[in-house]
Structures are given as structure tokens and as C-alpha cells.
Image 1: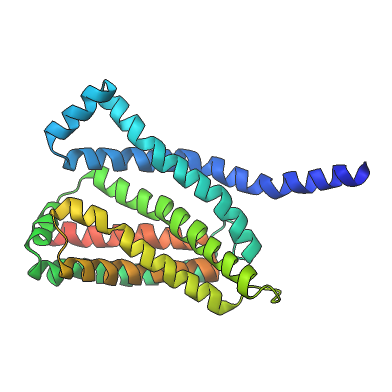
Image 2: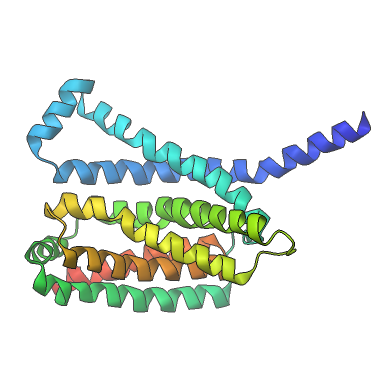
Amino acid sequence: MMSDTVTKQKRNNRFRKPLIFTLILLPITALASYFTVLMSLSSLDPSAVEEAIKQVGSRESVILVSMIQPVLLALVCGFFGYIFSENLGLMRRFQIEKKPFLITLIASLIGGAVLSLDAWTFARWIPQLSDSYQAAGTFEPITWIASVLYGGIIEEVMLRLFFMSLLALLVWKIFFRKKETVPTGVLIGANIAAAVLFAAEHLPSTMMTFGELTPLMVVRCFLLNGAFGLLFGRLYRKYGIQYAMLAHMLLHIVSRTVWLIAF
């Protein structure tokens, strides 16, 4: 009887931290999804928005319905991702330490500057992209908040905390189960796979934004997003998911600030 009580307490304690983490994520993911939906609606054809409103009754209902899926997905990924990360030994206390912060800050400043150069490189060969950077030169709070919060929080929870951790855990337990700790090579491989998926995830939005996917657009998507995905995964593996989130958010802030000044 006593052993059953102890086992139950251990099980409850094991799920306590992931549950707290998920509850903290809830308002953040809701806010990120809200602004992302607003940004998406502003880019859609007005007739398509009107048709959606007719189907659900009001603009507010369209926004609410559109928010449900990303919020639920982020919460599920956050809960299980926390558990997977703990099993891998990658989950750290959610605090900001000086050395990891400085490394993250420097990497984000350099990465943001590199990303901003997209406006003077690929944009020269992709006319639709050049037009989008002219629009990026205006400060639109909705777009800024959506890119910073959705990219920094939701994408990192889904791609790094959940997918990268799950893949590393599966490979470790299936192929290297005799190892007491997860091999570094497994984490590196999982990071690469997560970075590729992160890049591929941006193809539908690229198609929707520009109306087509040319070979150059695909190369650009995998080159930029894949490289930054590797950076975020590296920070997660070395210092914790909070630094991957911070780097992703700062990357958007730095690059958008450059475009705002330049255009």
C-alpha cells in the first residue's frame, strides 16, 4: 500500500513541471496565435475573408477558430517536449545566465544582420521578394509581434523542444539503449533533422506570399531557415530551450530593425 502511494506521488511529481510549463505557455501561445491570425487575415484577399466570416458568423469567430489549432498544438508539444527534454538531460532551469546570454546575444546580432542581407542578395533575383521588403520598411506592430512571438515561442516549442527532443530520444533508445546518456552525435543528427523540417515548414507560407515556388525560392528557404534552425538547436542543446527562444526572437527584431531603417 505504501509503495503504491510512493509510486503515485512520483508519477504526479513527474508531470507537475511539464504541466506548469504548459500552463505558462498558454497565454503566450494564445497571444502569438492571435497576432499571427491577424497578420494572415490582412494578407488574404478580402473576398476570402468575407466568405470565412459568412461561414462562422463574425470576424471575431474567424480569429478564434483559426487560433485553436496552433494553440492546442503548441500546448501538446510543450507538455510532451518538456518530458522528452528532461529524459535527454537537456531541460535546464528557466533562468538567464551571463555567459549563455552573451553568446546568444552575439549570435543573434550576427544572425539578424546576416538575415537582413537577404534584402540585398536574394531580393535582387526575386522580384516578389523585393516588393515585400519595401513593405517591411514600415513599422506594423501586428507583424512585428506575430513574427517575434510565433517564431520565438511556438516554433521553438514545436521544432526544437518537441520534434528535436522526440527524435533524439527515439534514436537513443532504439539504437543506443546501452548508453547511459544520449550520444552527442544523436543530438546533432536530431538538430539537423529539425532544422530541415523548420525550413520545409516555411515553404507553404512562401508559396502563399509570392504565389509560386521557384527553385531559387526553395534554395533560399532551406539555406536561410536551415542555417538559423541549426543555430537555435545548438543553443537549445548547449544552454536550454530559453536561449533558443531568445535567439529566435532577437533575430527577428534585429533583421526587421535593419529593414525599417534601410527602407
